[in-house]
Image (tube, rainbow, N blue to C red):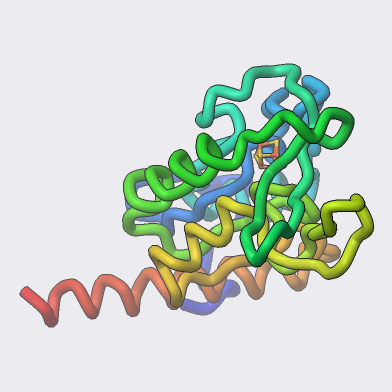
Length: 194
Ligand code: SF4
């Protein structure tokens, strides 16, 4: 679908059910779900993507019952296993709750999604941007947050975009077009399988 063929956002009446479903980290939509009770509202996403896409938001850490506010956590590699431990108190281990919730969300919340927009550097939502530490709290590399790990396992081909990629209107428009193309491909696959 050509972007030019679309009506202007001014007189566009959203028909949400027909728009591509795209997951998004809830804090990017302005929801006060971060560990400190704040959000990371992303104006371009709201202005340039929200009118065209059926955005489905969730916060894996809130869904895991960690509360708002909550102690910040970071990813720590210990004997080849990635743990989510408290930044200030490393006896706080929320790995199991986050992993279980992430697997659950990847199955239910992510069904039928064309893409996912994630918050950079988060121990849950980061995609290739999350700091991984050793047990002495030194950063050893960047990787995926626990939710994104589960998302990639459940949906290996899903398009994942880091919020920091949406730096200008052109990038946003190209993403919308990609989502409509992906939705078309998914519908085609579904009908040819029936
Ligand atoms: S877990 Fe994800 S959605 Fe929740 S506050 Fe952190 S980055 Fe945002």
